[in-house]
Length: 324
Image (cartoon, rainbow, N blue to C red; front, side, top):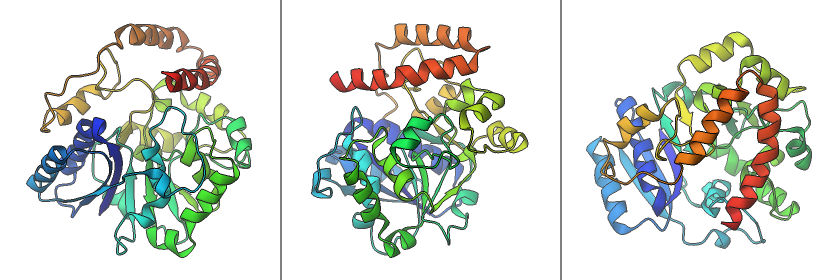
């Protein structure tokens, strides 16, 4: 089982926590972690290697000095670190004999076995991904994605590297990104959705459980997805009842003081088992979370109103974060 992360040095504690959650819940699996690094220090690399080997797993850290060495056009990732774009050229970074991977964002936690995810048949697809139900029609139109087609979140991907190389998917996605002047709302995620729309297999949301499923009920999610068909209510209940991978999208993250995320305590259990357990948590979020929690309480009876407000605020917040 090959699992890939892309992180910089600041995100090493979160990386280690994610790795810990995998190792603790997949003890019988033969796992090799590939970490695409942007400036991880030698001390942290050594500590990560020793930590992973303690679990009897393997790790390979690949230093990516400059993303621009792989992209021949100007791009704007807004407030995101450009390391996220490494997903578009894994074929040039990973060993040639790696024919399948699970890609995970650094802000994820694994709560169970990944065996069933790894076993999904991708013979006719390049990527397996879970839907992002809150993606609006404007985002789809910007990438010429039919409104009836799902828009997928790229924070958790099952990638058929053999087929990726066979059809030169990396070049296809990069060309799509270039055609859009390197400026898309969600960068490589939008590029993947637009360029590979016919080669993505929908996987259960239990493998990419994000805040959408905490703040919106099933009825609201169905409305948001229209005219795209959402999963059945029965599947939704089963997949949300005991999610396997938690994706901490948004500002509410366990390592920020004052957050009320449902899975914070579980995340900190793994955090405290890593060599970075004593890393100070992020301060300065307390007032933000007080306002955020009040907002969520007031909006609970009005999920569609909450969605419209957040849909308006998110682009503003991204621009503010970029300036900061």
